[in-house]
Amino acid sequence: MSEKMRLRKLTPENDLEQYNDLLRYAFQVTEKQLLDYGWENEDIRQSKLPVLEKARVVGWFDGGRLASQFAVYPLKMNIFNRICRIGFITSVATYPEYTGLGLMSGLMRHSLEEMRRQGECLAILFPFSIPLYRHRGWEIISDKMSFRIKDRQLPRKIRVGGCVRRVEPTHSDLMRLHNIFAAQTHGCLVRNELAWGEYWRWDVDDTTVAIYYDDSGSPTGYMVYLLKDNVMHIKEMIYLDINAWKGLWKYIAAHESMVDEVTGSNYSNESIAFWLEDSDIRETIRPYIMGRIVDVVSFLEQYRFMSSHGEESLDLHVHDPFLEWNDRAFPIRIAADGSVHPAEKESSRRVELDIGTLTALLLSYKSPSYLEKMGRLTTDPDTLHLLETLIPKKKAYISDYI
Image (cartoon, helix red, strand yellow):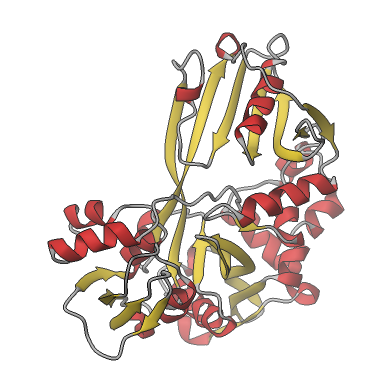
């Protein structure tokens, strides 16, 4: 069967209906569910049109029938204060009768090759199967923390100036705030029009945006939330300083008489329980986003290690059976400012690891010592200590789901 399949790019003019049908079949989204969300029939049909218009979507076709598909959103991400071009993988789906033919591997390989040509050094996705993607060189790079706070546990003694205003989702201060936050936050996506469209895609009309303004009237934090069935559901909260954090939690506490509990998601990888007067709350953590370096050379050219007192050298021996251009040794020279340059000769400092481990390491999801202890990285003690001093210690903040 696979010999008669044809791989090609999907277009808005010819493939929108088949693209939507495969997504809804694979993820078991019914038309009734969409209508219950408040969508109109035409809205349902057009909802993914921006993907086909602005993302790179490829698929395998069995004659004229779409069998499998794979999409890449071109986006930008802050990687330790360097704004890098990346690809967000989405719309990965295959009809069950076409599984086992290697179609998805072919689409993934094709898309990663295109990402390399486009200069997108990193690929990220929300996995439907962690083992499936790990087998192809992906690794977990960020977590999602969820919390549940009873009304009686909300903070009551917060003293802070400024004020909170509820605004429209299209308010310019919201976009500007997120741009400022993204520019200073490792892992955060720089949301373009397409990313903002996906951010709001499944939100109902009652979703509210609240912005905190400091004493000078400058916006320094926001939260997106929904009040439903006596529960405040916080979708996202960002803040540029501690006063914004206090101001937003003071605003949340002002809803005490309206809600029984507050639930939400936290992507900063830090527990919020410590900061509450009553810390006996429920918090859970789960893997959220997986990533893989598309091209090691391109990634290292843009990467910045921690500054040091002098030049250092390393030999990265990377195993990547899926992308052969990464499956080799990379002798590198690390300048005092943290920038990376090709080395002319091999170093005595050798680090051996696979591409997924390298991705988790350089994005600081796990420390070098932890990866070495767990057998994911091989090196000598002196080089391990050097890695601990060179790699920034800040986990990635990734809140988007595309």
